[in-house]
Image 1: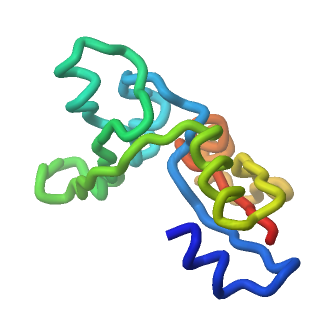
Image 2: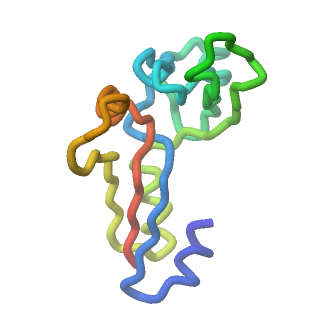
Length: 138
């Protein structure tokens, strides 16, 4: 896939993607992430092998809980899908092999101050997003 992306970009062009955080390789459910409704929920390969850290290619489940403001919670309102874990080095190696000369990882940032009082706790989410932006320049 990296080769195809590189093929269609002009020299100097940027590829930017949002991805699961490759710097977090722990196989624990982060309660802070869970409180915001989006979290890594299962780690079948690592659990089967008795590991507490993810390695390249390991599958993990992401859950998005749509019940956040519901008093009557329903399992039907939880979206679950699998993703694969890769280290930052693996991403960088694949992108550079495909022809990108610079690869940067950017953590999510909050721009400005939150004005709405009902969103004040959202700022805490930024420490536990589970997401990172990957930028590759050809």
